[in-house]
Length: 288
Length: 293
Image (cartoon, rainbow over all chains, first blue to last red):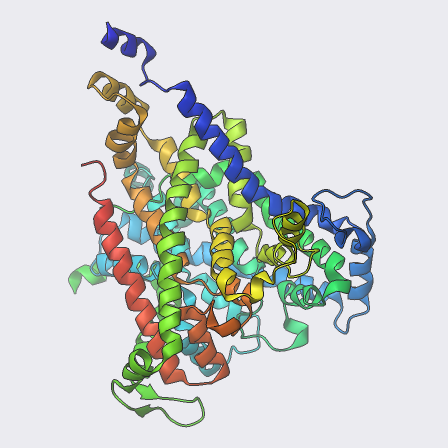
C-alpha cells in the first residue's frame, strides 16, 4: 500500500515542517547576503547628514542625487580626466576577454576532441594550476614582466589574462559535448582543422563564451593594475575610485555612489546571461 | 614522434595559449621554487643559501606561525562552511520555480560578483556609533559604548571570516546549481521504488553521486579561495593588522615580497602555501570519491 502510494507520487516524502524550516533558513541567509548590498545602494542616495544619523538606518529617507553630482565634480576637477580611467578599464577588460576567449577556445578544441601525445600531462598541469592562487607566483611574475618590458603598460594585465586556467578548463569540458559526427562530417567535406574550429566548433560553444566573458569580466573589471601599472594616465577605474573611497568621512556619500556604479555593471551583465552561464557550468565537473 | 607530427594541427592550435600559460604560470612556479633557496633582494644577484629561508620561516619567524594558524583557521571554517552552504542553497533553490530560482541565484551570487565592494563592511563595522553594528547594538541596549571592531584583536578574525563567507558563494555555487539540473529525474523515481525513505537518503545515494564532477570542481575553487584570504584582511584590518591578529600566509608573503624586498624569503612562503593548497585539494578530492558509497 505504502509502496503504491510512493509510486503514484513519484517522489519521496517531504515533511511540511522540514520544508518550512528550510525556507526560514533560506530567508535568513538571503537577508545576510543582500542587506549589505541594499545598504550600499541606499547609502548612495543619502545626503551626508543621513549617512551619519544615529541610530543608523537601512533605507534612505530623503533621497538625493547629490552624491553623484559631487562625484562628477570631483572627477572633472581631477588631474587625469575621469573618462581616461573608464577608457583604461574598458580597454583592459575588453582586450583581456577577447584574447582569452580566442586563445582558450583554440587550446580547448584539441584537448577536447583530438588524441595526441602529452595531452593528458598538459591537462593535468592546467587542473593543478586551478589549485593555487596568483599571489603564489606574484614575485616571479613581476620579474618576467620586467624582462619582457611590459611593466607600466596595459598589457601587463591583459596578456596573462589570455592564459588563465579556469576558462580553458570550462571550455574543454563544454566542447566535449559537441557530437563527433558533426566534426567528421565537416572533415569529409574537406574542411581542415582550423576551418572546423572556426566555423563549427566556435559557433557551437557560444553559451560557454558567455561564461568565460562573465568570469573574466569579474576579474578584469575589478583590477587595480596588479602592481604593474604606475602611470596615472594608465590607471584603472577601480584604482581611481579606491582613492575616492579612502577620502574619509567627507567622502562617505561619494564612496557609496562609486560602489553602486561599480557593482551595477557586473550584476547587470550577470542578470542577462544567467541561464547560459548555468548551462555551461553543467559541464564543468572534473572526471574521477 | 610520428604521432606528434600527425597531431601538428593540435599543437598549432594550442600554441598561443601554451606559450602564455608556460610564461605566466608554469615558469613562475618553478622560479619561485628556485628563488626560495636563495637570498635575493632584487638589487644584487641571488645567492644560494640552501634551506636557510625555510629554517628561518619555521623556527625563527613567530609571525609566520600566527599567519599559518590564522590561515588554517580561515580555511577550516570558511572552506567547509562555504562549500556546504553553496551546496545546500543550490539544492533548495533547485526545487523552486525557474523565476524564483533566478532571483535567489542572483541574491546569493551578487556579493561575489560585485567586485571589490567589501569595503561596505568597513561602514558596517566602523568604530564609532554611526557604524551600523555599533549603532544597532547601542540602540537595542546590548552595548553602551561603541566598539572598535577592526582594531580589536578579539573581533578582527571573526569579522573577516564573516565577510569572507559573505563573498564566498561564487563560481562553485553556480557549478552546483548547474550540476543539480543535470541529475537525471528518473533516478529519483527508481530510488523511490528501491526503498529510499527520505530526502536525506535520496541526497546521499542519488543526487550527490550523480553530480560528483561538479562537487570536485566546487571543492577546488572553494578551497583555493579560502587559503588565499588576503584582500579582505588588508582592506578591513589594515596591514599589518593590530598585533598581526589578521595576518595570513598571503599577507605575510606580500609583506616580505613588496615591502621588505626579501624575495627569497617571500618565495619560501609562497612555496609552503603552494604545497598546502595542492595537498589539501588532493586529499579532499580523494574524500569526495567516497560520496554515496
